[in-house]
Amino acid sequence: MRINRIFTPEPLSEGSTIELDAGASLHLVKVLRLKSDSLIELFNGDGFNYRGRLLIHGKRTAAVKIETRHPNLSESPLRTRLGIVISKGDRMDFVVQKSTELGIFDIFPLTSERCDIKLNSERSQKRRDHWQKVASSACEQCGRSVVPHIHEIQPLNGWIAQIEADTRLVMHHRAGKTALPQRTQSVALLIGPEGGLTETEVSAAIDHGFNPFVLGPRVLRTETAPIAALSILQTTFGDFTI
Image (cartoon, rainbow, N blue to C red; front, side, top):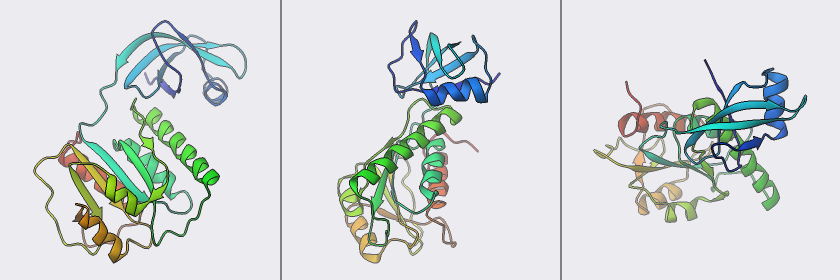
């Protein structure tokens, strides 16, 4: 039987009762039409699953009485960090959602020379908060209990200079084929905007220890590239099996 999973930022512990926010309550009570005593699974990002029973207080308010706590074993042994130049429309939503399903650990929204999106501090924070909710929702669906952290929007040049990972890769279609290492525990992956990274940006990334990375002869869109690359990385170094 499928158990509905709900993210909450609240501290969780066995025996406690957690009041759900309006959105979660409405979804469970009005949309899914669950009844009191239905089994619910909560998580708050600490790597555990908390199972309990639904308590319905009214038409739009509900809580969960937590009964048990169990470690969630769905996290990949490969720690992946994605730096991707922000794009228009819902492309970033798609990248955040699918990268979360593919086990991403951190997502760094970046700006670059060919990024034509200009955001003030207030709008940047709203975008970041929205993407964080997308990641939380993706965790509810895919079974993860560690929510990827969406970092502040920052310039590409600053990110490539400070990001830490055993293996650093910059994807661009002008690269020649580069062999991946035999083993690695962490990967930083750099993806450019819709117009691609400039030659200067690629050179700067290489100067900071990034290796050029290309998947094949076709040019991938900015929202397709991270999904393809993360799938290969999880198969090579993580927990994907074929």
